[in-house]
Length: 96
Figure 1: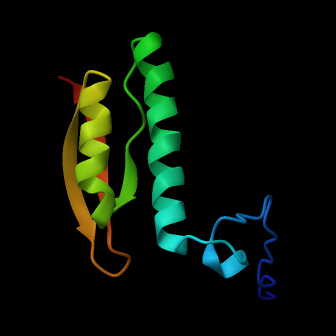
Figure 2: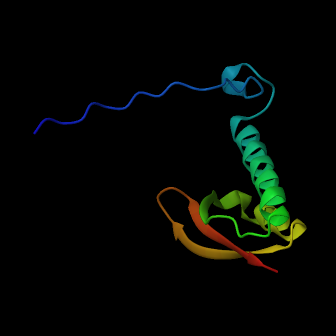
């Protein structure tokens, strides 16, 4: 049986605000802002249709902010296991 080829990925959109692309902001700050902004918008929709969002892994430094975003939309954060090698923690959402 042959080995599958290494996957190749191409960015869908350049993040020109990130230093790695010549922008003024640290890459990690840009990614944190985009992650939290996307979650905020997801929770707007989830709350509007009165459903619980899917569980996911969140970068550990973002947990406090994610908790505040969840509270803003009527959810509480339920912390799960931490994946030590990646530095991400599994989180779920419940109604507050």
